[in-house]
Image (cartoon, rainbow, N blue to C red):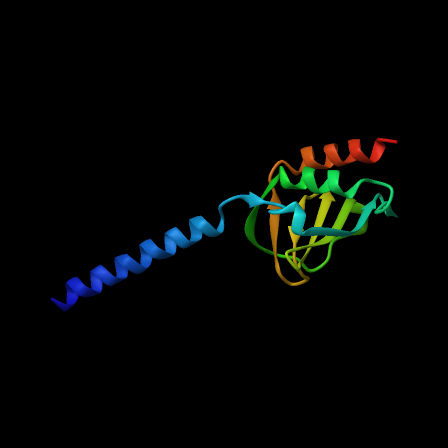
Length: 133
């Protein structure tokens, strides 16, 4: 009888763990609600362009793309590999988006990164916004 209980509870824990991992790694929007989001800085190839582009259009663009959690931690990233860097807040939570050689989002140094799905397309779309007069 104890053996059956042990098997049952062990199976239950494994099933719950698998479901939790699936939910954790499920793709989610880069920006969930553009109305509660604010961009504090946009850098393009090392030059700040925060006030040269319409932030609402950048937020709308970001809301169309998704990211996926990973177990990779963010510590530092070589600046020569960065084309676009976006810093902001979403519902009071800080976020940082790096686009270039690798495309990811992170919330704080030492935290886990979230890999941007189709990040090269996002970079291309942002470059089109930057090129607009």
